[in-house]
Amino acid sequence: MKQKWWICPFLNQLIKDELMHNINYAHQHILDEHDFLGCCLNCRRSLMIIKPHVLGFYKSIKKHTAETRTALPPSELYRLYQVLDDVAHLEVGDRLGEMILTDPEISRALPAIRSYYAAFFKIHETYLAREILKAASPWNVLESSPLYSRYKALVENQVKAVHMDHNAVMAFIGCGPVPLSLILLNRFYGVRSIGLDTDAEAVNLAGRCVEHLGLEDGISIVQGDESRLWELQANAILVAALAEPKSRIFADLLAIEKKKGPVPVIYRTYTGMRAVLYRPVQPADIKGFKIVGQIEPTGRVNNTLVLLEPE
Image (cartoon, rainbow, N blue to C red):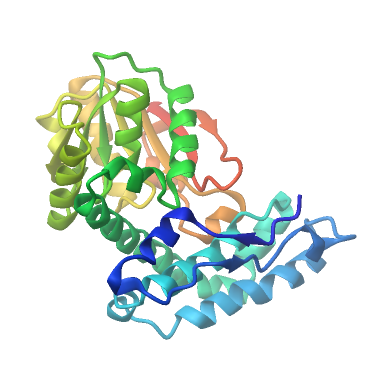
């Protein structure tokens, strides 16, 4: 079915905030199936349809520095993200996906596009954490947030990849200010977890959000990187899509697993058109591990889940 308009309930709620008045979050999708009538979505003609939208997005963000991105009004931040999101979730063929990512002009734009994507999530989660902490009903805020349903679907896929009983503990490297994956794993599946992040503000916000949601008995938040796992006990390890640097993280995990014993390692990455959003994990990053399972995303979920074990 053709979808032209989408208004997020959470963003409508934000309009009520006195700092957010006069914001219109309605979004008209820039591309839909009618733009590709008579086209296979796997050819050069398709590339010529999509390319102006990718470069147009790049043109709209390249004027921003890290500081000016942070200062963007939420209305503009979300509007830009929705444009990028539309492009990334086009269901294209493998050949077209490769053509887009290797096109010289698009390749030059990818670092800026991916930098914006990472910045968007940091700003978005920081804002959401503060809204949760202000709320008398924090679950209502969380459940109506714009990406909640995507994370719920992603977590469902993760549970399919690795079964964990109620005595297990999952460590999440790069949990961010709102450790939504851990929150959902605990709420719906009873999985206990430890969230790790190197950012002091993210750790503070994540810990307070977990407590405000009443999940502090099942989720612990710790400041630090993957090296903290030398002293922590975990039955599975999850590496966030935006956790960096990947090569160091996986090298450290391999050393830990060889010393302490193997546990399942899952990482999130980007495949197909979604690789426009962020640099995919490369084979060199996971040297010493082998891939034993993979779950591709569906719908508007961004991440591919990959299950590893030491070679």
